[in-house]
Length: 106
Image (cartoon, rainbow, N blue to C red; front, side, top):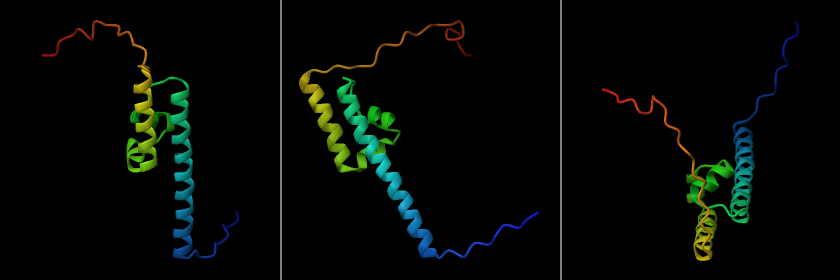
């Protein structure tokens, strides 16, 4: 059995720098995903909402609201859809009632 080799100690500054790099890369990925999602929703004629963009981009609505460029982009897309009369509501889902859904709880 071999022992794992010891790594040279990593300074606190190096760890912090690496963490910042990882966070910046993650933020860039989320930024691209959000921009792409806004464009895709508009191009596909789907209703643009903060929730729809967040779901499509797999980011939080907080992320969209806190970034002024995203907030403006979503609000602009919503306004354009309203101006153009785009009504792209999600298709209605038919609810099937079951004997359990009719059950009253006492």
